Length: 151
Image (tube, rainbow, N blue to C red; front, side):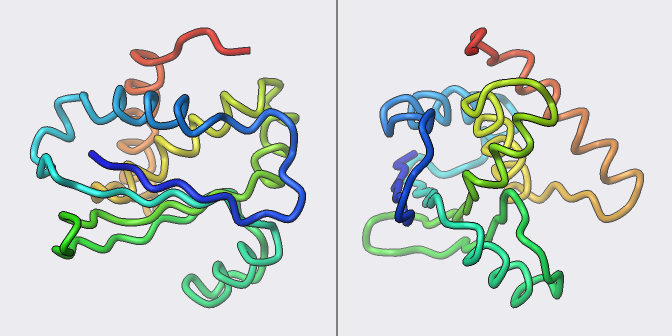
């Protein structure tokens, strides 16, 4: 899996993970059996964007007029560089609010949001109670198996 990472932020907050740390974490996530069907030449785009852009995209694509923490867009198209699986957008400002609320680090929150976004790309959703329970169980399973004690 090739990961393309971009930071589209004027003033990135302290504590954002490095590209190396993110790619290493994503590789570990994608080693789980649930992702075994992904083509080896898959591409994943991850962008960190500001709160205002996140709100605009959430309004445009989900008809929800508020900033959210993560959005996932499935692509599933073949490109000259390989199979473009999709794009995950994360708002560090919203992630920081979550980290404060859940009393853990920004790094832990970003990892949780990445797992959440990756599961969306793989077809998981949380529109119904049953879907939400299934997605939460898979998130917990993946995070429990990958958690490295980052503070």
